[in-house]
Amino acid sequence: MKEKLTLIKVGGKIVEEEATLQALLSDFAAIEGRKVLVHGGGRSATKLAARLGIESQMVNGRRITDAETLKIVTMVYGGLVNKNIVARLQACGVNALGLTGADMDVIRSVKRPVKDVDYGFVGDVERVDATLLGDLIAKGVVPVMAPLTHDGCGNMLNTNADTIAGETAKALAQLFDVTLVYCFEKRGVLRDENDDDSVIPQITRADFEQLVADGVVQGGMIPKLENAFEALRAGVSQVIITQASAINMPGEGTRIIR
Image (cartoon, rainbow, N blue to C red; front, top):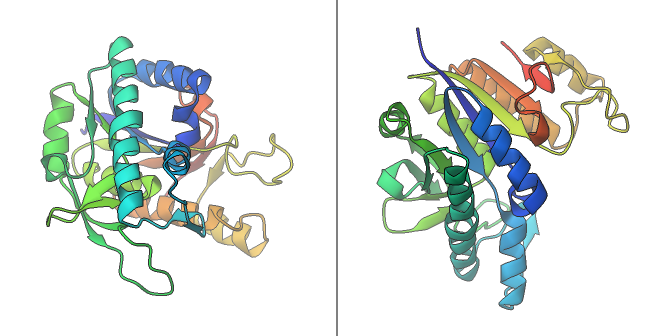
């Protein structure tokens, strides 16, 4: 029987503000068993870029990463944000190790091809080395993964944190019984976007298709749920969409199930 592992993905907003960061890390430290944390950091990158006179360009919520922006996100994601989290987790008794995809060649990506938009130095994940990560985790190490990968040719690549979380969860599902938790600003998937109490407790594939047809699930939530079902097909046991403050509250949020 596989050992349980919880993979938490949190956005930059949570880890960039003192009050929410401390609460998150306390809750994360309290999660029993094996665990992994994947984080964002976009607002900090945007602030530093502005301070240095570099304009941040976004298309469909995704950052255009030119050569100068790549330097910024590498410094912020792999340095400032990641190491702050690692140091704080050590203070919580968690033996954390900060990683980008380049460290130990743990996540290899390919530069996104130019179609309608040239995203620049943005990576699409090709593979995750589950064996190396699994060895670290088995030794009691808790990986803290920044949204950066590399192409194997010496280039760092900016990579979406949701994608890193999903691809890492799928790879680790070969070795562990994985629960993937996506944290965002709402309590879960809502039946009514204006009612925070209208959380849908669980969604199957058939439910999802009906919710999309009815217009309940729309916009950015559609690809989020598509990614969740893809993770389930690849062997992840369950995917939970919830608030960061609820990662230790059984029954909170929306469970995406086979």
